[in-house]
Amino acid sequence: MMAAAELAENTEQYWKNGYTVLRGLYSADEIAAFRAECDRLWSLDGLDDDLNLRTEFRRGPDGRFVFDRLDPVLDISPPLNGAATHPALMDALGTILGGSAEILKAKLIRKEPGVNGYAAHQDFLYWKWLDTDPDALCTVVVNLFPSDEQSGGIGFYRGSHQRLLPGPPENPEGDFDPAQLDPSTIEVPALDAGDVLVFHSLAPHFSGPNNSDRPRTVLLPSYCVTDEAGLYQRYYKREVVRRCKEMVGFERYFATLDSVESA
Image (cartoon, rainbow, N blue to C red; front, side):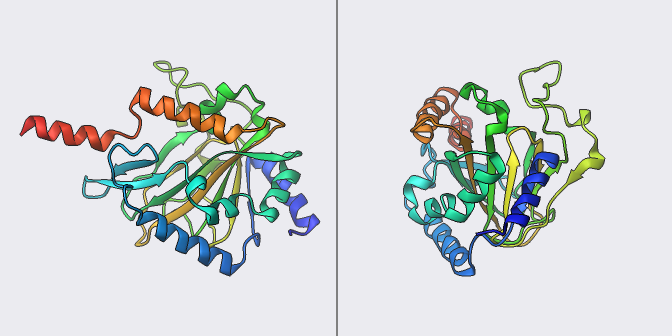
């Protein structure tokens, strides 16, 4: 349990900057157990199946596709479910958000050395369909190893979480153009194993490539202050339909087909 004064400071930082870092929520033994669980998950049969809707691939440093994430993950991992619902974390989120938080979604990402990061975006853009106040939504990053700019840690435009930013003229409903924000406000928090990054659904954020010599492994559950039951199930029922309709996650499968057709 975090001290009240420390949590009050975290809450002030969250609403001022759009993010904050919680420390001391997990013990060293718990973090070691989460790491061991990630190793187990990464060795499961079927994860490298191109048509597995739970997995996703990205281009690695040699141009080949590498296994990038498990999404969803909590339903196949009791230890990581325990991490995402840890009493100390849930108590802290309740204080920061001002209400009882329910899990919306959760994914496990492992960014291998040399793998690129993610372009600047706001999570709320993809959650507008929930018809929920963006202040009620946040994402948590449970760091299982040290994370910084070198390893492709998440960067934020500090204090730019007041509104949903418009996309470029050619795609006004898409992700915003980073040129409209002040680059001097960018901060990439340096985090230790076990540190928990919490950020607002409107916080503009991005990540760079992993230029370190170790994978960057993080658990990313998202939460919503709501009285609605079954929010997690509702999210993933919709997500499965979306992925099938838009062929999301099938990039490696299509690349394989293209190579066969051109042979």
